[in-house]
Length: 61
Image 1: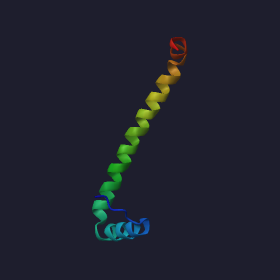
Image 2: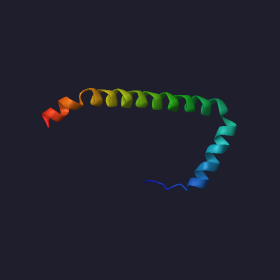
Image 3: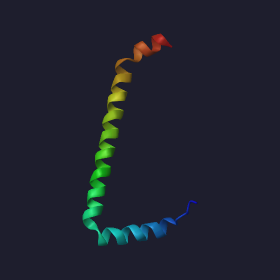
Image 4: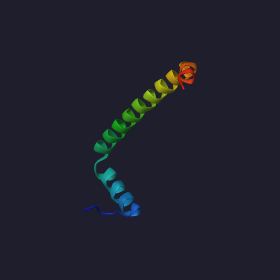
């Protein structure tokens, strides 16, 4: 069973949690930032490769 949580209730709970557990929240934020950076790096590489091989892809199409 899935529970629907009101965003304001969730916001309040998260704020309270961040106040009570700042070290945990800071650690979590750093983990999320690292994951975002990895995704951005992959997207940059993918875009670069598509640009590099654009003519090849057009020829194959």
